[in-house]
Amino acid sequence: MRLDRFLVDKKLVKSRSKAQNLISLGLVKVNGNVILKSAYEVKPDNDVEITQGTFVSRGGYKLVNFLSRFDFDFNQKLVLDIGCSTGGFSDFFLKNNAKVFGVDVNDVLDKSIKENENFTFVKANILDLNDFEDKLKKHNVSKFDFISVDVSNLRLEYFIFDLKEFMHENSYLIVLFKPAYVLNKSVDDELALSLAEELKGKLAKSFEVVSFELSELKGKVKNQGSSEVFFLLKLKK
Ligand SMILES: C[S@@+](CC[C@H](N)C(=O)[O-])C[C@H]1O[C@@H](n2cnc3c(N)ncnc32)[C@H](O)[C@@H]1O
Image (cartoon, rainbow, N blue to C red):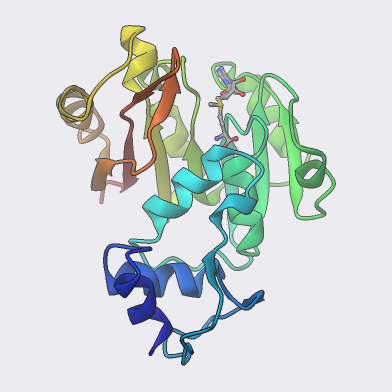
């Protein structure tokens, strides 16, 4: 049976298109080997696994689930990862051959990310834009193909609109909205979506909202699962 059909049949993913995306991202192994072809013929005794657990943090797992719906090519793309923390998001981008600049007020990066030659850490507060820009200038970068944002307790409205200056017309902004931090309590799907709808209204004034959907993987707040929403944005034409 074809590998993409096999993943759906075994209920490892919900749809064939999702299976195909995971395969193309190099996240599916058969008998220990990464297989990049959806049409690969799987034998009944083959050992098939989705290798999402290999990210340095849960963030990578969340991101790959969301991005597997789209057909992005990150190869040699410039990525800015805001709130990079341990490096879960960065890990995903690096595994897909991007060049990543990670920003955080704290340096808690996993050693493997920090030592990756395609990763540059910028220790900065995203609210202090002048300082951040000065630090970026030293690396001769100003615009990014992709920007990801995962800053938990920091309100997105405080800085999200400033990010436009780091985007070009084909850039994508990927934002993980975590309403639990705004309300200081665990949030279910319905509440998360209604708050996301409210945020969408504000974002839509400056950005084209390409997509917004619940993260398949929930956040953890006070030991409870809490719903989170991914936004995919572009500059408004
Ligand atoms: C939940 S973590 C991000 C997890 C990360 N995406 C991953 O996959 O490992 C949120 C991060 O945002 C950072 N952060 C919060 N406020 C910030 C600010 N003003 N500027 C830069 N980073 C900030 C925190 O220090 C924290 O490391």
